Amino acid sequence: MKLIINSKNTNTNSLLKREVEERFEKLGKYFSEDSAVNVTFSEERGYKKVEITVKVKFNVLRSEVVDTDMHTAVDKAIDKIEKQLIKYKDKLRKRNNESIRYENIADNGNGDIHNIVRNKSFKVQPMTKDEACFQLELLGHEFYMFMNEESDNICVVYKRKDGDYGLIEPEL
Image 1: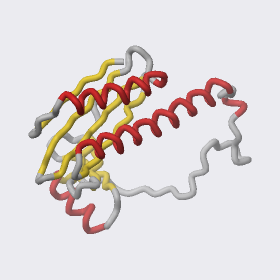
Image 2: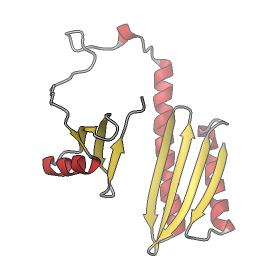
Image 3: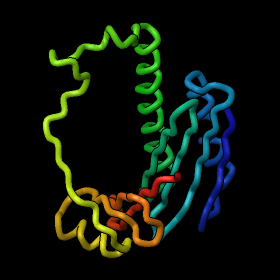
Image 4: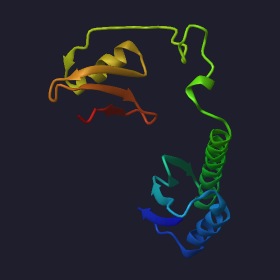
């Protein structure tokens, strides 16, 4: 396991770094040797923020905690990562113990594996990213699919938790 500790807009002392290293040593049983853990400390408007990103084989686990005390934020962020790791390992263990052959997947009686309850189609309009964000707000949906005028690709714009917007563009 590779542990990388960074800081933005704050000074991290060796005590805090040692605390993170000790906590991740205890979690070492969940990691393979090629796993990378990136811990970032930052401070904004008096609040301490800890971001942890763990790259495991085929997934990325992420935790972000904001608190008034850096040590509390570290504890909460590592606890979140630990829960995610346990859930991920249990999922892998179940997958290895059970046969995942196509014949063994339960279907809903008509040959379909997944139960699609609604099918919707609409004409995709060419528009700019700003127009797509405006349409998203008007509709009140979580995402909006559109054709980007600039690239002629089908794109998806979505509302993020922080109130900003995200854009998903396919790479062809």
